[in-house]
Image 1: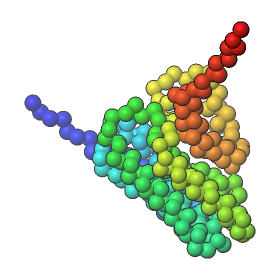
Image 2: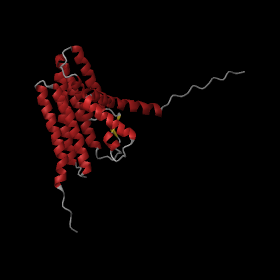
Image 3: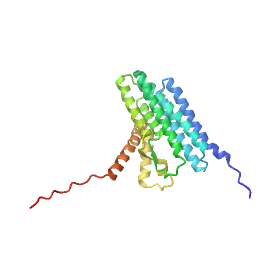
Length: 250
C-alpha cells in the first residue's frame, strides 16, 4: 500500500505565525528601550493575535505537533513574558529601584512557569473548555492594555507601588488553578445566535472606536472571571445551611 506524501507546507504555516509572534515581541522590547511605550504595548497585543492564529491554523490544517507546541511556548516566553516584564518595568516601576526589578522578574517567572505547566498538561486529554490559571497571552495583553490606556511613564513612587501590586496579582493568577474560559473553543463549531452576533458587533465597535477603553475593560473582566468562577463553584459546592427554626416547648 502506497503511503500518502506528507504535506510539509501545511506544517510551516503555524510555525510562521509563531515566529511572527516572536518578531512582534522582539520589536516591542526594542521600542520599550526607546521609550515608545504605547507602540510597544500595541505590538504585544498584535503578538497575542498571532499567537491565537497559529493554534487555529494548526487545528484547521490538522497539523498540530510537539515541535509546534514547543516553538509556540518559546515565542510566548519572549513576547508575553520578557517583553511585558520589561515594558512594565520601564513604564511604571523604574523609579522604585531594586524592588521594581523583583516584581518585573516575578511576572516573567510566573509566565514561564505557566507555560511549562501548560506544555506538561497538553498531552493529557481534556475538554479544553477551560484553562487552569490565567493564560500568559491574556496576562500580557491586560498589562499592555493598562500601558496603552496611559502611555505616559509613571513618575510617582506611589504609582509604581500600585503597578507592583497589580503585577503581583496578575502573576498569582497565572500560576493559580482558577478556571478561565477558553473563548476560542467556546465559539468554534457553534452556530452564531443573536446574543453571540450582538456580542461580536459590540466588540468590533469597541475595538474600532474606543480601543483603549475596550481592551482594558474586556481583558480586565477576563482577569477577574477566574476568581469569580472559582468562588461561584465553591459556594455551589458548599452552600450555606439554612438555620433551622427553634422549637419552643409548650
